[in-house]
Length: 102
Image (cartoon, rainbow, N blue to C red; front, side, top):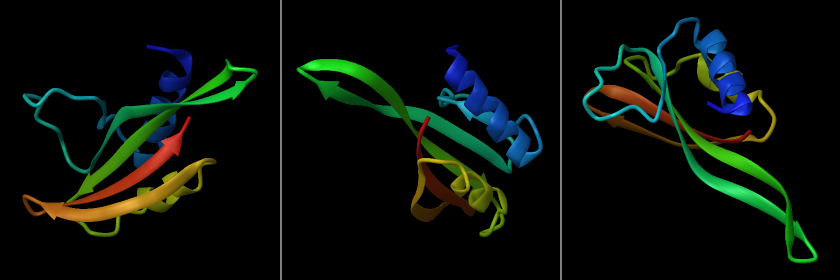
């Protein structure tokens, strides 16, 4: 586990107030709700003179809860380089998607 992702994991656990934070969980894992699921979905590269000089991981964070307005959503949006993407309901659970570069 790289240090930046480990740091993000700790921040998310602190925000949600439990250890129900899952990084790229397998389909077979039974998650406990409310929870946060996140995956790395891109790497942003900054270039100069055709050389990458900085790479930043982009994560898709999904807050999953039975309640539609979990307070952790706004807490995550308080982090730098985060933005709200969308909301949807599946299996009677609310899913809020946040994108963050970390």
